[in-house]
Length: 388
Image (spheres, rainbow, N blue to C red):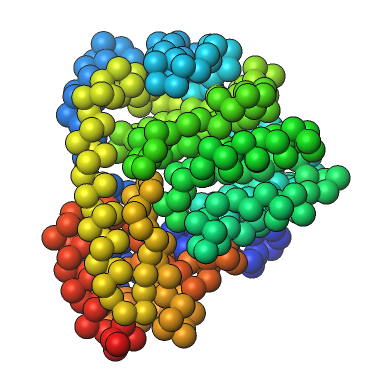
């Protein structure tokens, strides 16, 4: 909005596609909303009950500036038990969401004009988060025909004297792709060669369907140059609790703490208690959540690949998103998304919202149950643009 009292950097509308989707969902009273990655599953009762019991016991105050010590200890234990990765207390910062963790990390490392390479298609806030930290986002396209893997020659061609960091995301939002270990090793090699930091967004660790998840920081030589962003939002269906954490070298964590003290002070105490319970009981609460989302994405992928003029890579590799190729329609992503909303009353996000290389795709979030997914695709397959 252009106004003399608004900072000029915000005069141009910078609303994300996700932010706009809320209003679009109200267009019709029977919209099936596949636009946002907000699970329909409620946080498990075990976590809710323990958090509010702890609130009754007095956990309603500010916590330690780096997070509840019990939660930091639980995070250390989690990494050791799941990945045999040694993380010490000083390398952990608890924050009010993974999104905030990403912004704090960027603010901590970027000087004015530094460039940050973004694995694209990317989570829509990344570019503006880089810009808010006074950096310059640089898109690194990944392609469907390359299985959405990072092409390391393409990556290396984007690096110059101003390049500071690379942001990767696996399992990916929006593509659902998972980087192979071989690809990650090549990224690590390039990071070492050019002395870069890698910010690894790992908030979908539980949803790696084809292979065991491997934290990027476990690659030899990468722990000292990796900032890992975690969140409880998706792995434990805790989106509204707004709780995440950053794992990074101690000097970065100290800087992040200094920044956060002037932004949020501390993450919500009750949410931190919920996170402790989630980690301690992950082997109990996660399996049914993972199984449900896997069932949904596999069903959706099967339906998509039976509809003319759209397809998706199979089998689904991770997350609960699918990136649907609609190039055979001859229309743009925005045009197809608009047609689907108007004719089928199904809300999806156009792929260009996730970077230039997302043009020709739609993203869906399988955050509704299979019967609703069935209804959505029953409506879509009746549309003229998806007829043979």
